[in-house]
Length: 371
Image 1: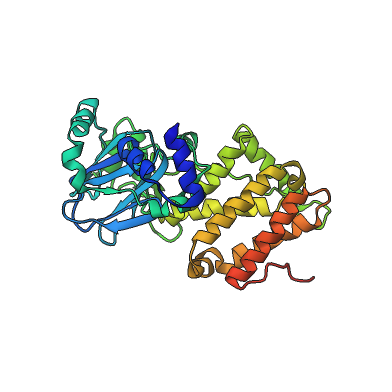
Image 2: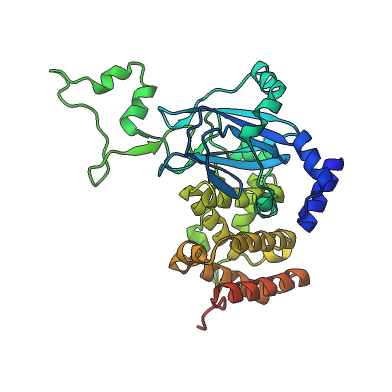
């Protein structure tokens, strides 16, 4: 309980007391890497480094959800989420040959051996970067262990990578065949090998099972929606449908929204950006939900504020606002909040303040163009 109280004080003031530092050393988590190579990139949450020769991991990790990622030279990052418990030791083994984590999990005997040897290992363990912890919390406070288990790829370690593991369609079918070798045999009776190609003659590739992120399916606009006799399309029913698939758990919805952004920003996984955009578009085109789900939209504005506050200006202009996507969708949201009857006064105030902040920070107008 003391750790929670001292941590809340740190998050509020940004100053770490000596008492909290001692507590974190004694009760914080550890991550230990085996076979790590000098010069590899290692990152946790909002901070990354190129590791020194004797680096074997991190200490004093605050309990809660964290995103760990690594890369070799210019290779795509490989990352995973983990919800650290107090004094937990997490061990991961690196394969130099495959440039990936080994699919094994340390047993209790190895964990106890490492725990007994922590004092000797201490000099090779870097401290968690607490100077970035408040930024991380603002980007991840809705991501829970439930969110991680629901969304993470189904491979053994829940690894996430920007370079998806892929498999050809013929390899996929061979795995399902009672005699896979027949798929690739060429003889007198079968003079061509089975090959699947697209309209451009390229092999049809699918993401290898277990490596796709299990994002929620965002309901699409139907033909009936497009035929509605009104000025614009209200996506509230689509939002309600998505929320229903999550047992109307707003925290899970917002957790997925944050998860998608973190996977893109830290993990450099484009599919995270695509899901984030899909959710943004859905939310910004709602009207009646602004009244019935006011608390969701108030939380959304706070999360968006932190996400856009943490990203550099050039990142906003070059990536987030590319093709005018973010400016046009947020302009629609601000207009809907202003024009929808019965909108909560607190939501209206938050929307106006957020709009003014974005206009000033990025030098962009968030007003819808006149008809």
